[in-house]
Length: 175
Image (cartoon, rainbow, N blue to C red; front, side):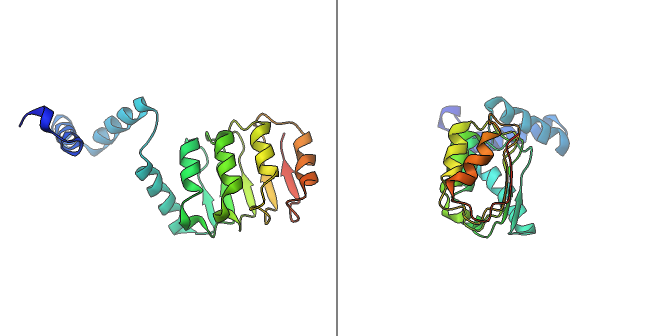
């Protein structure tokens, strides 16, 4: 078969078959090689991320924790539109790459209206992201928020209270 006529799925099958034969069927070696190929591109397929989300929600639909999982801005935006998160009360995305755009998605997502606890430590969030979060009208059930290890100062703790959007907020950390 001419390689120019192969579609992407056939190329993927050929690559995996080749990996299977060159590693003598060693699944650990095959997975390690595939992970290295994905690492070069710098991102994972959204379908893989969706599997992470499904598996975590299957364990507990009210608590969603993905700390230190290299969650990107795009994945965070996808998560905030994923209808199965509608019952989440605790969202832990610390030590990821959410950034200001990911925070904006969280702040605007009507699916997170039941959210009580939000942990966004160490995510590269600036005052722009904090401002969007403080102005959120959809996170009114929020009781606890942790924004430490971002690019924010202590003053943001006061700004959240001054915004008046979080009547139940009793625990906030920014530094």
